[in-house]
Image 1 (cartoon, rainbow, N blue to C red):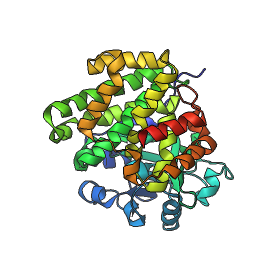
Image 2: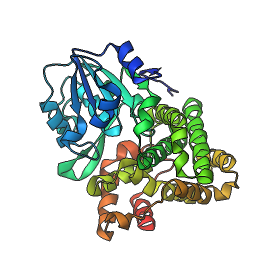
Image 3: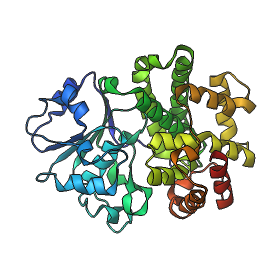
Image 4: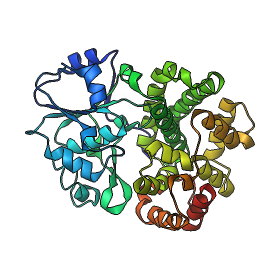
Length: 370
């Protein structure tokens, strides 16, 4: 069994100015980013590079329609793609590094074999997705009202660059949802059947760093989050290294229909399902990897093992209040449709579940969280 691999070269830069200087950004580069990041940090950097602002093509999660629209506006044939942003920008940038980008749906339907053509540099500006070190691009498929992931070796970046300066503009809510997403990456990958001592080395470290930061927020208030951003950027990257090898499971699989139909941000959708799924795992089996995880959580949260999910929910509520599914507009009829979607379309992800969840169990979880 393969134990661990990390594809992108991982770099860290003290400033955006250093990043631009060392990468020699210029003609032949396509920078995909957001205007609110580019103007204060990169304006004047990389003379001759084409710059595209993702938000001009729509807000929210990345979609097939957004990818098609952006790619139509790309000038010439760039040699290097530089994605600077959150999960939306990074997932789109991965596609633009491919030899054939359109029709995008054909890539996700596996009618086109992904082949890497352009060098790819990814720079995260949130503390959650870990996308800079994964080979997965997740899009909302508008015509199908769902989200789907494309996983392929060709989607790995050549360089993943961490620039803590870029997180200075991150609003609290995006910090909360993205960092909870990173926590879920670390937790899900730790109980995956593909977990190894190496993936848990990164995942457990991420869990410890994130929970330590959350406990400080619980003690001192949400206003201290700005002092935690550097550590959380590192923790997110650690979590990405873990789940790029071991994979995520039911939390992600069951969140995709919610995100796809009701446009709930990825991290928030995962949060809506997180502890409910792990409580159900415990009903099925409390042994093995989940018992090991619970021991770690108990130590970090300073509580008995049997109280870890209650204590975790209490801590997460201090960071961001979790909403029941109905508050997003979800109907009882949706729960059956969501269940069918998970069982029929998310098999790539549910293969990484801690234990098998059949359709009845998936429907039960949705009902409990409704």
